[in-house]
Length: 247
Image: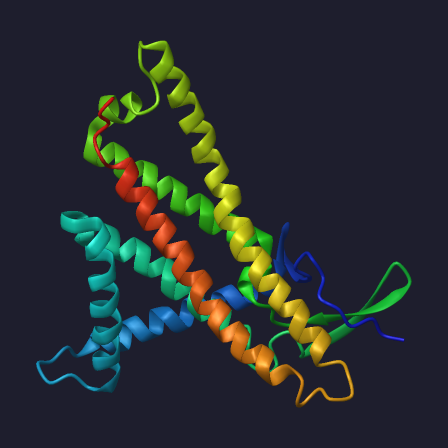
């Protein structure tokens, strides 16, 4: 009897030398290619009377620009490309994972004497490696911008001081910066993985064409909210860390 379930770790499809290519990596390449293609065609022939794809891109950018500007202020032009990239990458990755065939088309192979199903494609954010990578990029970008705006001395001054009390608070801040990786990655991973398990469970009963429908609508909402939370938290972290420290 084949064991159909959602594995916690992404399954390896093939290897390129020593590098394993998993189904979540394959999906990541598709998401990246689609977003790059959309950006290319939206800006290929920019005109005062925009076509459909340019008009859609302008609406997306303008809406997100208004949202970011309320928090970032005069730093919006610098923060917007980073935050928007996180949002649209995560959002499209979440929604792509809901399409028919994602997670349901694949092959069977044997693991420990049991036949298990391995999908060709898997939702990118149901792989903890992806969400940790996104969190690391978010953290590195935040600290890079902090050094850019504050300088090295101003940046170090946020964490180190001669005053013992401020030094202790600074050390707590360093620990807090490290925990942001766990916070960002596990929140996104947990919500998307749980949704994938829920949908897989709902589609394996006798009412597989009826039961999952409300859950799909729920996952559409969850996918949007989680993308927005990740992007907005990254934005808030950037704004806070690029502000001058005043003890």
